[in-house]
Amino acid sequence: MKRIILLLAIILTYSCTNNSASFSLKEDVVLNDYYTQKEIVTLEELIRYADDAMLKVTGEKDIVTAYRSYFATYSAAWNEKNGRMDSKPPIPEQEKYAFLKSLNPDVIGSIWRFNQSHKLIYDKRSDTTFVNFTGITTLDEVMYGSFTEYLKELGEGDEYYKEYSKSLEQMGALPAAIAIYYARNNRKFDLEVPHNRLFAAIFVIGIEDNIYTKLDRYYETTKND
Image (cartoon, rainbow, N blue to C red; front, side, top):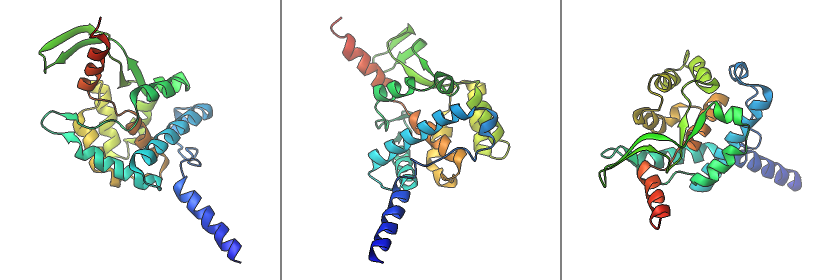
């Protein structure tokens, strides 16, 4: 009897602390309209990757608690005066880029693009303007793609996803206010619901170093040139 109770306790603990391993998007009927089953497997890989990052950076054992904890930290790190994040992203940039490039390019390309050519970059710290600059890489949201269309359909029943997809199409980028709103109000989104978990994972993976951190790396690598 004691062995049975111990075994049940281990199973319950494992299911609570490792729910990313079994998290499935198969119940998301809307998602099936935009991605094949093979592509959905890639989206599930993104969830596992983000889940693992959340557990690692927060030290939490429960996935949902880890996301809540991280978003609270993310919100607190937002610098209202400078309009940028003053904390490191949860996943190191080069590690993240390598992981994304190892996955199905059609799926990744429906969400983000690796932008290595910037028409205009301004470093106000040194009053320096870079034109057609290729010194840094940014992970930018895709304006028109399967993921945006998916969010638009979700937006028919959810105001936040509606505003998110509209901003991408109209502005080509996500306004900081919409990102911060999501982080500050994350508890309104049930992360056990497939589309909410997928969005949270993509949001987390998309968090980048601010432009000045990227420029500082560029300066460091070119200072002896």
